[in-house]
Structures are given as C-alpha cells and as structure tokens.
Length: 367
Image (cartoon, rainbow, N blue to C red):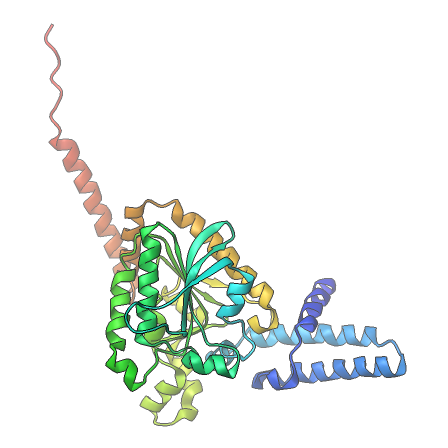
C-alpha cells in the first residue's frame, strides 16, 4: 500500500502546480508542496539528503488528496472543472487524435473558433471530432469568446457531422463551455435556432455519436453538440442547465449564493449518473485532471475506443431506436420507465403471436 502511495506521489510531484494554482480547499496540499520545495532547495544548497522526509510528505499529500477529493461539494467540483490548468480541447487533439485534419467554416457566415471540427484517428478508429475550444493564451481566449460558441459554430458543427454521416464515420464530441455566446450579434444570427436545429438533426444521425463533457457543460451551449448514443462525463466535470452564478443571480439576486445554487442544481457526475442523465463517469487522476493530462486523456481514449466498438456492433435501425428511447426517457421516473418497457414487451409478444396465427395452417396431403 505504501509503495502504491509513493508511485502516486511521484506522479503528483511530476505534475506539481505552483502555489497560485492550488484551489481554496487545497490549503493543506499547498502547505505540503511548500515544505517539499523547501527541502529540495536545502538539499541542493547544503548537500544534505532529505529524500526520506520528502517521501514521507508525499505520502501525506496522497492521503490528503484522497480525503479531500472523495467528498467534494458541488461548488468545489465546479472549481475543479474550471481549473486554469485543466486539459482543454487542444490537449486532447495533441495527445489522443492522430492525423487530425481540421475543417473550417459554416458556408454561411464564418469560422467560429469556439468550435473545432475535423477528421482524425482515435486508436484504430477513424472519427469526426467536434469540440469546444476555450483557448490557452489571452489572444486565443478572446478569439474564441472564452469557449462560448456563436451560431455559425453550431452550424459548422452540424455541417461537418452531416459530412461524416455521408461516409459512415462515427462522431465524437468533446464538450467544454460555460454556455453559448449571449451577444447581440449572436442572437441576431439565430443562436437559439442553431442550437435547436442541432438537437433535432443530431438525434437522427445515422452513425454512432459519443458525447463527453471534459470540463464545463453549461446550458444550451453544451446541448448544441451533446445529443448522441452515449453521454459520458469526466469525474470532476459538471453539466447543468445554467451556471451556479447565473442561478444564484436569478433566485437570490446574489452571486455569493453560487455554492448553494450548485448544490441545488445537482450538476456533478455522480448526481447525474444516479438520475440516469449520463451513461458513464470517466475517472480522473488523483487530484483532478489538471494533475496529469496524459492519464486523463488516456482514460478518455480508452472509453471512446471501447464504446465505439460496442456501438458499431449494433444494427443501424436499433442504434437509432435506442437513441430515441434514451432521449424520451429523460426526466421520466423509474416506475414509468418500467411501465413503458413492460408495455413495449407486451406489444412485441402480441405482434409475434398475431403473426404466427395469421399464417395459414398446413393441410396434410391425402394419401
């Protein structure tokens, strides 16, 4: 057990964050980081071996991470999902998608940088990748509205998904947005309609569609590329009809009530899995995705490859029927879901019996 803790500690140490990147609830972790950094400094200056003390502190840090991250509140989960060093779309494209070829423009207005589309390979599977881009540098963030897509972004996404459908190529969408861009220009160009058309058309795509929330899943901005056969979330991502701050401003007219709003919205992966709104929760490294980009991307890639393999075994008509049933079951109680399944089963049995009875009986030949 101690050996495993030390291995985890080394991984955390290789991905250590600066003091300014620790979250509010990670005070003890930050303090342990400072102690280890001081011991390393003293070791280089005085030539004294402090490796045993550093190992002990690393084991304490692992234990603290396990304690803190095993019982995160909804608001703390939102903070982790928004961490500035959390892997973004560009990290997934670099580490997971091979031979990526980006496709631009919606053939109507322009090329929205908040949504990136293109072909590539994930594992051995050729896929169309559609992802929301927040940008890393200040210039990139401004260019893509901090990850808030415009209508032309959603139209671009749908056009490329239709293109993939034409050639029978599966679609993978990576969701990471605080919401669709709320500017006047976006509304004038039909923001709501663009999202609504995507919801309608994505539900009918005749190829497997996998949607994954890798960070923030805010409102209609996330839904605009979030309709598919499977919907998964990273462990410390969130998916909500509105941001906690927006909800607090509406209900309490006070942004400081965001933690209470986050709790009421039930936006964490655990809550949404219990409610049946998502299909899977993808594990993150100890301490969150920002602690190890490679481990996070590997977990996402493994999920995509396995899920695509299962979906490609399903007949197309069954795939579409299952997708429709999945969407229709959202918000339905477990009792009602059971009733519908039982009713559908009875109808299939009745239809099969009618088909048997309608067949003409064989008349034995006369001797």
